[in-house]
Image 1 (tube, rainbow, N blue to C red):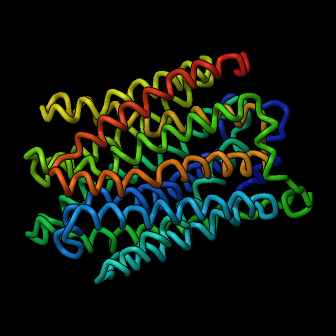
Image 2 (image 1 turned 120 degrees about the horizontal axis):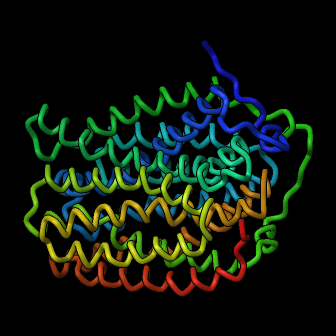
Image 3 (image 1 turned 60 degrees about the vertical axis):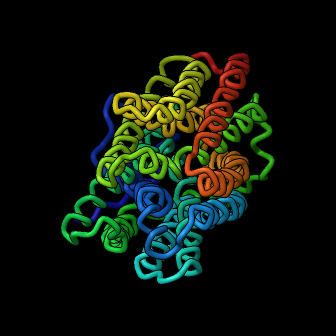
Length: 410
């Protein structure tokens, strides 16, 4: 049976909605969620869990590993700018399809990459795909369920990223057990490319181009984000989130290995981050629909600031607590930020504003991996980058609190 999505923009404009969602809408949401899983969880966030193996097989130093991480981040930044511009002219479903094609291509290149340059190319293509899928995805989700469930829609779509991280850790362990090789990594990307092909097919069948988008001729200026009250605070919050996240997340597994954790146990911790991330988007999204969004955002930054400090202790319970805390906030905080946009904007305006917001995030996170990589190579530890990550996350607390005067009371 082939499903076709009801026009998302028309669905969002329905004045009253039943308590539940229709089956076709639920299927559409699941496919959009799976797309974010492939584009972000696979295309961008599998690299950290495979970093040690790739480093041993191809690279040879954490400094190179940090620079390689910037291939994805740089592409994500470029892609964000392009998608923010394109979203003023192209409907969101088309952008998502192009993004998923890029994600599939990037994963395929990564699976066969023999050199640093080829790995950089694969991560670059995957980074472009991540931007092209992620920026329109939350807006599509919000249009499908309506503004009263905006936070939940952002959380559900964002949980796809966590699902990808969840899969990456155990999948890596299974591949290594079958191959009897602690450094096996290429088959992980092969399997993920296969999943990406299936999700792409589902997206093409289920998410059609909304007729209303084609007919409306709607033009949205890039400056539309300035119509959102407190927009500069939202950009600041996303920027400090980007710096803190990039300093910690990309080298979490590497720090655990340097602290004496095994490859398998480090992969399971990474998977736990994914589980918490999948839950965090939904929990924070729903909480932000019930309670003031700035308060929920503040809680996310507090969790994010605590995670690097707990990880540096090296003890099992503290590291587990850190992985849960970071997983919750890594999806929950952007979900809440995006939900605040959805309080004021819909349709293409929402996609364009979210792209502009994500552009600031992309610029902010660029410095993280090279700095952490060089420090890790020089000292054999990521203590300094993790401390800076904690401090940057703590800066998000007063920014979130300042947003209270701009929040809509529901």
